[in-house]
Length: 430
Length: 146
Ligand SMILES: Cc1cc2nc3c(=O)[nH]c(=O)nc-3n(C[C@H](O)[C@H](O)[C@H](O)COP(=O)(O)OP(=O)(O)OC[C@H]3O[C@@H](n4cnc5c(N)ncnc54)[C@H](O)[C@@H]3O)c2cc1C
Image (cartoon, rainbow over all chains, first blue to last red):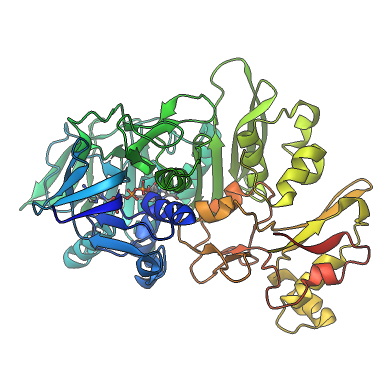
């Protein structure tokens, strides 16, 4: 065996970075080895579409400064893929056939983009998924080489929408194909989705809902069109599949580590096997509102889980208070934020709504049992975090609920005790 | 670290904290010119909330457990190692508003041109933040914390 580290981290993104800082809060010197398949210095994954669109430079991709590994005393093995975890031996295997040992292991491998198996022709040149820096470079190179003028983005979720934004920047005529009835249906309610769709349409983006791709048509091995299940064929020089990511669990499959959708973890980010932790998009942890274990593939979640895992790996006592689905996306120039449950699940939920379609502003608050469980903000997002805080806190808002929807709503309307705690600056987490 | 403590019972809602914050962060540093020429280009890092006779001035709490740093997808939002202040590196901010989504105090704003986040920078280059120094009724005070 080449080496045995006190801490071994597989992954080099948000969850991994947070885990390193979590460990270093408690253990300043214990050896940390971090392994990543991607060769890059830790970078901001959500910026890859900005990079393609030319809105950020390669230098701006860095998620942490150039000397971060050194300063954090981390031995980084970049461009190294792990193929197998052997929990009984406390080792992992690399694609080069090397074995690395650990005392505590963190799996922070994130997600793998889905390419639908039932669509014919996805192996044509010009068909991409879009979740890595290298994907951005490959797409950029393909566009330049083949003078791509039109594209189809399959999937109208977060990554799909961000891909569209990049393609708009590049002047490429884009069509979005979404299986659901509306775009962003996972996080938005219908009204917000329709506002977003209308704004995109104004920018010349075609949005096809309730349909998906059946086949990718190619000539000389290169994509020339996407054939939809509703019979239509859309000519295009590029196809991006953005229909979601699946937890990257391959390396632990067949071990005793419990996998459901993702790697199942407890509130301390421990897997079912001793000394092995998981965090980020690969992990399936408790969701705050429903209490069930879910995979929530968002950045803040990955950070928090990584931090909790790191502290606990180093002997600390940190606990994950539960994940909350949330997102902040700007559609062309309209900022939007959605948090928690945005559509009532049954009659016991109440909603408060304020809509101005012409101004593209919309606010919605979803209540259940006197508590806020979700919210949507379109256009006007100022102070949305106050509502997010109330959702996290589970505070009974019955006494001031009518204020919540008002634009002037602020901390001043909140119960003194809660407000005092928020402004104390010690942090709001339990 | 030093922290700005809000005493809402003393706040008279005068808004001088906002005025001085704007002047401090203006190009000219002159009160009249800052207001005449730059008022719409500066979002003050401290803002007074008012409800009837109640009021208090709120700026970023520079939380120990700063959720904005965790949610920031570019690494722009960071803790200043020297002062402990939570600062936004606007060269790295892309205006994704994840910070606005999570700040429980609602203390982060969209900057005046709508492209980057704007927040209290704790006047790290001053002995005492200008909002504290200019509060006429000690509704904002600077206190040492362990
Ligand atoms: C285009 C795009 C836009 C997004 N926008 C947002 C947004 O606006 N807001 C938001 O909240 N979230 C957004 N996300 C989601 C967010 O990026 C993820 O939630 C976050 O990156 C998850 O972090 P992670 O550390 O769990 O894993 P990842 O970021 O997926 O990183 C996984 C790491 O593991 C490494 N790895 C994987 N397998 C192996 C292996 N076998 N061996 C070695 N190394 C391995 C990879 O190289 C990588 O370093 C976006 C994602 C994409 C793709």
